[in-house]
Amino acid sequence: MSNVFRRIPSVNELLESEPLKRLTERASRTVVVNGVREFLGRMREEVSAAAAEVPSPSELAERIAEWIARAEQPALRPVINATGVLLHTGLGRAPLAEEARQAVSEMTAGYASVEIDLASGKRSQRMDVVDRTLKQLTGCEASAVVNNNAGATLIVLAALAAGKEVIVSRGQLVEIGGSFRLPDVMQQGHVVLREVGTTNKTRLADYERAVGEATGAILRVHPSNYVIRGFTESVGLEELVALGRRHGVPVIDDIGSGGLWDFTRYGIEGEPLVKESIAKGADVVLFSGDKLLGGPQCGIILGKRTWIEKIRRHPLARALRVDKMTLAALHATLQLYLDPDTVEQRLPLLRLLATPLENLRHRAEHMTPQIEVLPNVASAQVVEETAYLGGGSVPTQGLPTVCVAVVPADGTVDDLAAKLRTAVPAVVGRIRNDRLLIDLRTVFAEQDTQVVETFRSLSKSSDSGR
Image (cartoon, rainbow, N blue to C red; front, side, top):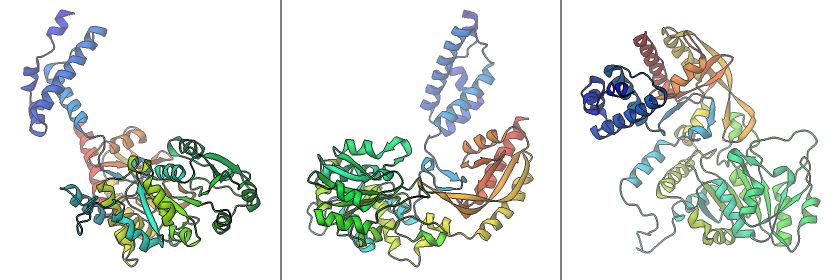
């Protein structure tokens, strides 16, 4: 065994090898030295445990260089989304507009007036940054912003109805991704769930029978990620608002994805508009900032001033508050909506949705022959497919799209997908019928060249490995 250990080169010997010399030109010497020591430490353990063979110094240096290079790649890095899911939770949901990215850059380069009124020099509230614009866009009296819509649900329940009953239709007790269940959130908000109606039918009379002295609020939840069809009945927001007024209890409308833009123009039906909920009299409306709004991750709370002030003063407001980067990105995104003539082209989500099918087909026809000629590709075809909005929105409604369907010449389609995911830039597609689909509904036109170049880089890598 001692003879085996003697065959393991020293750290200094390996550092003089060509692969690790090249690596020190890109990474710091300290990183490389620590990486070599860690790798050798693991190798000694393997040799000791299983009498494994020790590779030659040159082969070992190559392995260590590759291992360090992989380890140095950040886990969080840019991705070209070719999945056909526009609001892909795993890929960060809505891409930010250029204006939002610029605003974040400016606010993080130094200090920012987060909680100081520059005119008076006095302390202000950080929500004031977006409050005026939200009022303009929605007609609300006041607003608050927290870290996400789950946080918004929690703080609204805790601030308005702690210790009391909150009435919810049984058909609206949703569960979303990550095992977020509304009953569990209500328990954490210290409210008592009062279910009414049945899974498929809830009438106004069900709510009326449930309202009493113990009632803290009436909650309506938009079931974004599922649909109940057939023998159904539900109660409109106007009726719930009228009931709440009669009994002096607030009506909370959790609309989930939350839109400031009419998505029916893209063939997407059933997603409520924030402005409509406010106009119908909801006391509090809450929704996500990084879904249909197309902004950063946050939970936006709008409504009557009396209730919003209670939410702002609640102790959870500090625990769930957003930072200057989120505020800057949200403000810049909201500003785009003030000009309805240009927002569709300036907001990435809307631009992707508005791209004509013929445009996608033309791009696919241009990309396909460039990919098909590569030696590691057996075939590439233009195919029409279906894309989805994602983010828990309208799961049964698809969007027409065009894809480049690729079959690899060597290995499996899963191998090809994995190579694309780990390339630079990373390209994430979807597999269907043993073909890798590059869905152009979620690829920006300026990224087409990058996609082709990534395929080419994989082809060169395959050639060099032969």
